[in-house]
Length: 167
Image 1 (cartoon, rainbow, N blue to C red):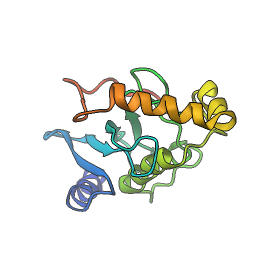
Image 2: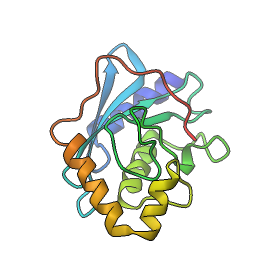
Image 3: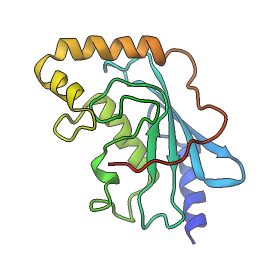
Image 4: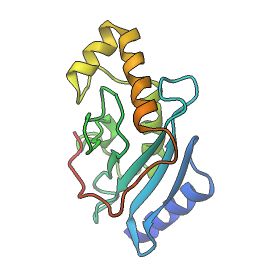
């Protein structure tokens, strides 16, 4: 049953992807690991960047939320500022997760996080403080990360890194 739903959602996301995204499987034999190429949304500080997003669906999906990570370095209050790229997104928290939620909705929420960071629920407190108190400095730093890390095609690496726990 779970793989039937995952296959249906994957088909939906590949034939009619969320805005600014291209979705495919990491490996054709594994429905549980998805690669998502996310273009930085227009009119955001991430515009012009290309981000590698890894979605890992647990074996008990949809009863447990997927793990979502941005593998491309990004300067953002809700994404760890390291090579893990863990994301803090309220719909992915176990207490908020609803089995009816589809991966496409999760991906749209990730995109929306780039348009509108949530500094009141940060993984990076220093970046959240900067976002709240010195928006110009935040935007300058975020654009520098786009230039430094997110130009060109998104880089996924050779193998899916071990899934880390999202906040």
